[in-house]
Length: 208
Image (cartoon, rainbow, N blue to C red; front, side, top):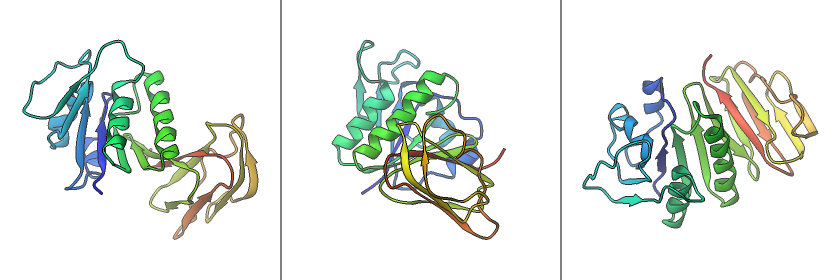
């Protein structure tokens, strides 16, 4: 199954590092303001979604879903739900963090929605990549200088972090702690993260 790449309207500054995440067979879905990133990413659209309040409808020869201005889902959320409906189970979210905090937090919720649906999803911004850790362990190679674990969905139990400067073994990680912030993989090792109950947001820092 191909991967769905959903491009939102948040700023993308380090376009070269973002473009390196793209694969030749990705299905590109541009959401409204995300259309402004199309030329820089160098990839045309396979699907365009939006209410076009932040970018004009290009009326391109591409499948376009025009949404109403007043709706329950953001353009990005709708695009993800539509991709799920079409059978996609792997996602890359670009232009989905930064600028407006409300949209950024909403897109972290989108990561959780995709995880709940059994999909694999990665959100990438200029400095980091983010994913939800729940049913399966996650890895942090030592090419990432730092990583953080944040609980954004209630208390997580049985949290284990190994191969890192600050290991954890079977601890409880509530929402109101900074215990998981700014850890480091050990040199030459790949850190691993596991949670037995609950979900965690893993943020791998690419560079400062």
